[in-house]
Length: 187
Image (cartoon, rainbow, N blue to C red; front, side, top):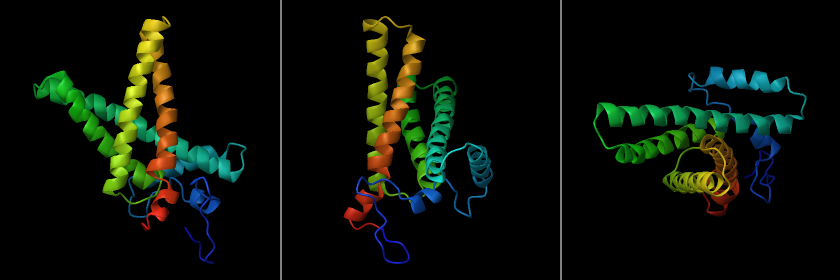
């Protein structure tokens, strides 16, 4: 990516530059429903005594976590609606709710967290990351509960944290990496 002076602003590791981080988690001007939330998060993080680049990174993590939290609520609501009200088997409801939540989270993260337009290719990468995260969480719950003897809810809490870290890292480096898009000549 090049700035107004024609200088390359992409880092070798694909991470965002300070200019890109300054735009992080700011909704587009036409997304008035998101703007108040973003402003609230920006004000909350502004009081933390950190350099601005770290504040920007913190804001991105908070936005990503917020999208995940909303996605979790959406998943529960969708599961309830499809299983209890529509009469679908709970496993079919689970799969359908997974597809709905992955699509929802992808769209919201694209627009709000990473400030990038959507693409089918990026959606596919995000779906893969989401599936890998789900598998990681399930395996971790099994190992911690059945092998290590942890209480199943403690195992689940640990797996959620591990899944969040893995999802965020993969999303940052692979799904929404400006380096990948530029190497393919994408806008």
